[in-house]
Image 1 (cartoon, rainbow over the protein chains, first blue to last red):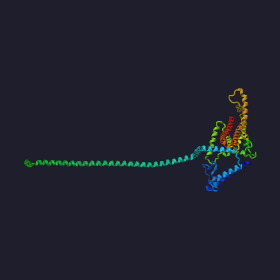
Image 2: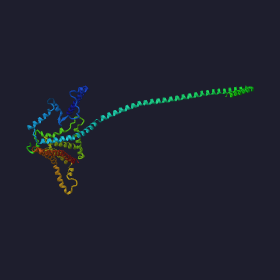
Image 3: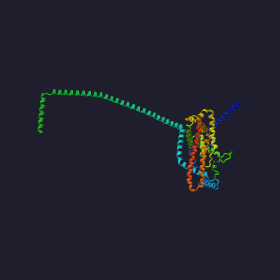
Image 4: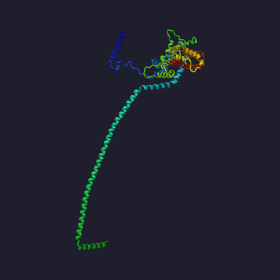
Length: 248
Length: 223
């Protein structure tokens, strides 16, 4: 009977927790409705401690009294309080006070001398820890950025590929053009060769005909010259020569 | 003004309302909090200290590493109490036998009961150190058992006596400030400075000695 009671109470607890979960999930998803961020802002982690004066008195106490008592207010308050306590022997100056004074001097010296180095060492340690904690996130970001850069590079290279193909196409075109022009040139040369041949042939024929005609004419003329004509011309030539000689 | 020299050790609180003894709870205020996941400078320092202490104590216990928790936490408690007692107006709880005997007697009697019930052979063997000549063995047994029995006493008294002696000297020297001429104050201040430094060292060392001895006894019983 007790076990049944225990089981029932557990079941009730489960249903109540699931009901509360359902109720919580039924509320709107926006955080504004869950929490008033203006009047109750979320705390930020403070990196540096609050400023202090004289090593241990918070600055906020001075700011608190500033509006009423000005700059010297808190100092006057402190001095007056100490004077009152000591003069009325509410605070008795005895052996603990002297050892406290000496300890305060030791502490001040120690903090001033070793404080910065210790703080720097601890800060290095904390920075390392923080880097370790954020390393997963930062490594993922770095990897993804590098991936983006790599894909952009490969896209650029792909564009370059098309340029390469275009250049190859142009090259081929130039080669084709060159081959075409060469063939054109050879065609021209062949045609010219044949035409030159024809021209030479007609020239040669004309020259033969001319020579043959000249030879035939000369031969005929030589045949037509009688001996009487020859003698007459020779005589004429001699008289011309004599005339020329007389004149010269 | 002191009524007598030992009034600095007087708890000065009624038995029903132990106000002065609450100084032993000061270490709770000195423990670093962990509100944020990222550690602060103080918690980093504390972590370094506790890591160092654990590494120091680990070679002493080789098998039963769980006792390290007792050793280091005891060391930190006694150290905080000793150092806090040096500061003015803070009650030194460790200067009282009733405080140190609580640790020493409780730990020792527990170890004795456990050891003699379950490891009787080993403990009997431990009574004679290695390399003793046969003629000396009976005396060695007597001497070792006596030293075993007075262990809680030595632990407690060592701690309290050191604290009492230091505080007594400190209060004597400090109270002489009121009665000495002004010219003597620098010399007295230098002497007091030296004494306070010594007391700080003694505070650390006594806590270390207490916890190391207790760890050694625990290691001895677990072997």
